[in-house]
Length: 487
Image 1 (spheres, rainbow, N blue to C red):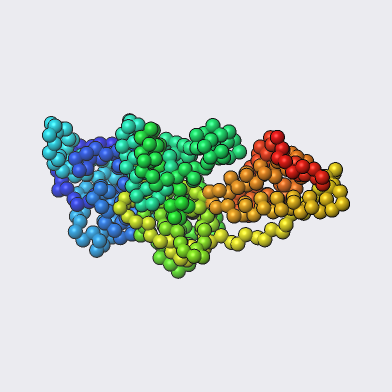
Image 2 (image 1 turned 60 degrees about the vertical axis):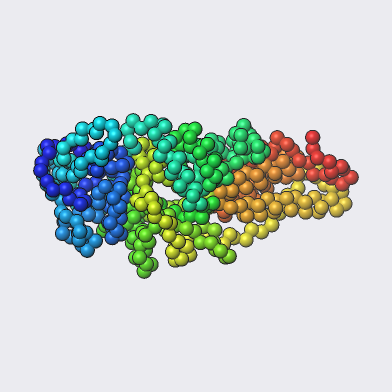
């Protein structure tokens, strides 16, 4: 917990350095900062120093997990030749056994304002208490969201941010305020009743990925109605985002054997080690976001052109605590908050760099296995007379193999919908007595798993689709019967 001390005379340095990981607030540039405009931007600036870049003026300070554990002369280097050392970095003991570091922050004269200027506090000492540790890479603390921020104030930040992403060609959609989940639709495909306006107009379930847009009018209409968070649909946006996560409490002590090395404590460390093992520099010069949990999102443009692979989301494929978001996935974008923690861009003007070719190769999905045509077991009593069995069998085989092909052809965000739709169609034939459930499940389940669905999710989706299909049975005409549609 940060505590304010007494003011002391000092010469304001160009930047403030020191072992500061998180702080309740501080005075800088004539303002009192808390929440994401303080803690998260400190972490953002820290990562810029790791890349050898000088933080932009609005990052307020350069400190964090790298500089936090180096002496000032070691941290300076050529990049910092024009900076001055902190006027006060005082390490002291604390009664509860923790170490404390006191930093003095500069307070320039307030900017002239037509209204009476506010009374600013004098330069003050901020004391940061932190546990004693031998870990050279403590996890950065997440940034709390601004306290007492009204919905209208949040919308004033979110609307221009969503429009700025759309101007980049990134497709955005609303997230529930303070949450990662999409605001619309608020239901899954198997629970779609058609009461949602978009689903009703389309006469089918419309996914969050389909709703993502770059249309300024739609964006203004959505984000002026409520302080929704911002989701970026990575597939339609042509992005691949690498998510470098923090371990759960105590998780660093149980890292996998492949990554059980000194200095590896989180996803960022694993990513750096993985790049080094493959003989490549860590690709950090790209649009970067500090997540609410203290992780990192690295934005890259996905490969395009003839023969370019369609990259999908992965979990742990590149290494421990590393996920990726591509087709079928999305990321929470700044200045959204999740569980009271803010997402902050390191440099809002940075561009997303092309995904390095060696990473694209490593993330390219393996070819789908060849699926043999599904043998059809006719139900008793379905004989169509001489030659009827074979005609019926051919018809049902065509229906099943067509449904399986539709699942294989579905894009990232359409997989669940394709599985559900195939189950609905074949469920109609089950209800009409032409097929049995085991045959349908046996055909659709391998296809769903092959395109990336979890088995439990696929089983649930197939069963739900067949239940829906049973509401409108489809009867296969027998020899001499009419081919008219069922009522």
